Length: 237
Image (tube, rainbow, N blue to C red; front, side, top):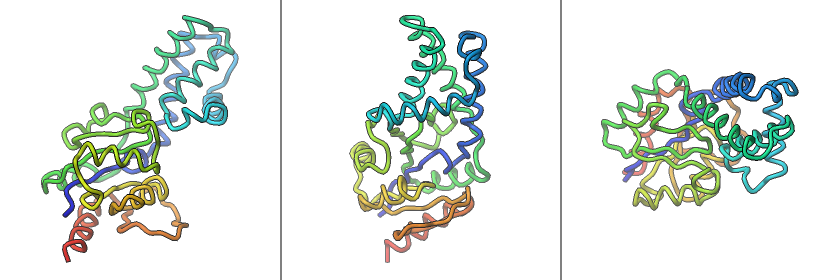
């Protein structure tokens, strides 16, 4: 019996690309005022370079977008001449600015209607995300019962541990959960390897290029309640 629905967030409930562009711009504008030596030396696009550098050179934090952002700021500000306690202070303040901007998202059409309907049907609902959106700060607190992110879990999807932590918290078996997400590997394969049913959200159109398949695929969030019901009906037969 399905009791719980878990959701990826980025590119599942909203498009992450404009969000990150705005985060970078907001942070860059803040640095112009508070650490001008950085913006005098580096263009806005340098943030992407710093992200990749951190992922390549600090693989032990590559699962955490929070740590990647902080480490990138530390490196960039250091190269701009900000050292020691001032560097640490600017990193934390700059990260707080970026994180606040990170919570400003534009939901895909029909998200709220779908979540309202599923919540009314009595499902426990939560988020399992590799990002650092916060369900309470993005407005999902009335619908979702819990959240797990890669930074706090210590691993990112598709690692089984992040799903296992959710199962332990919710006191559920994998067969009682449907995981819903856009990433074939992180979401579909990651959840399937533990025995969960899955729904692939293909709102941002992708071509499926894998041997395995999700239990259901949707291209519009309005189809989510019916996709969940199809899984429930199949299990109950």
